[in-house]
Length: 189
Length: 295
Image 1 (cartoon, rainbow over the protein chains, first blue to last red):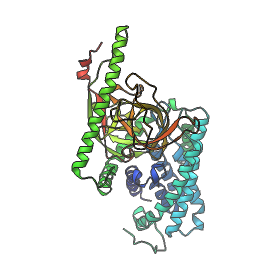
Image 2: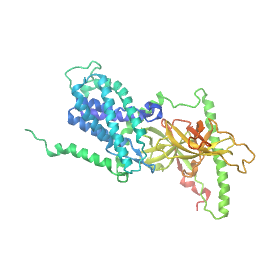
Image 3: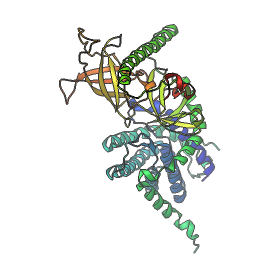
Image 4: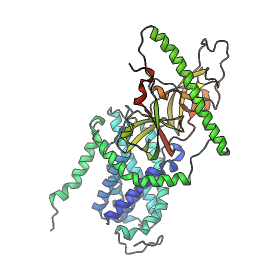
């Protein structure tokens, strides 16, 4: 796997998520798609296991740093770990099912993005809820957050369907080699 | 059989264990993560800002009246500014009257503070926070008041460093409640108090307390609260220079479910605070703080 290409596209992905979040935010309600998670799904489908897991930790820690939570005193709190562990679990899930799916089909990326996002978001909500229940003074409504994150997962799947065509075209650039050519995009070498 | 070095074999379990421990640390022990958060923002900024600029060109900010001409918009903006000035002056008059009363009984004097407005572009959203390009050298720090279009209250700075600032909009789900004044007439003499809390979807909601008869309003009938009325900030938790800034306009009025004799209003700011292209930091001008008589 070409780590430089991964870092470059992760950088673009985080930039897109930061800049376009208000545009794709459904009704300003906190429901929005993720660009980074479909990238993780794509990597986990093709990369060796260890590479995929380290990629999940890197993307998760970056997501943790870029999504602070509001503290009761008005300031932001950065929790390093919830997204990193969530993405790690999601990557492990993708790795365990990738032998049973058609990797080069866009619907696979879309469907697995929904499942991976649900796994990651449920873990994130659980960790933060446990903290809140333990008395940590963070502004957090578990039910509200779970609803938002679940709907966001479905939204992420819709976005992943579009992104999958870009990912398939970039398969050789990422250093992933497949014996069967994809029907859905021309490779960019 | 080939064996990997121990550090390679154990790196993943050690990393996962560290992440689990970090997840469970109390917030008070996580101040050091702020430095890493700031660096992450600095790394993402060069790509997020051009995308935001492109987005602002392709999808312009929504306006209240899309059919208004440029001159009508300019006049409306000027009217809003003067209305804010009028209300603030009236509020200051009321406060000064009270101050004179208190001074006569030996109360402390609060100095007037001039304010500088610093325009800064919004780079993007980070969960509920607006990511704004800023700088500590501009005296932007935590709790600095942030506005849009000079009069629309946006929120407060939650964190700032040398390059960026995080702003928590008043409509963010986690934002603190605000005390506001419903302007019942255009003169600004008849007002009703309300405590507004964010409810998501860019809206604020709260119960209204109707005014009791004062010498200024004696003999006048109290107008009913209607959709479209302005709600302005009047909250001691906010700096004096932020008082009477516009919170928004009433979008709906309904009886309060908990207190049927009171009315509950839903307020929407004049712009979507999550998608503004530019904000203004209101920084007290310390060089002119002596105008009001610093103690």
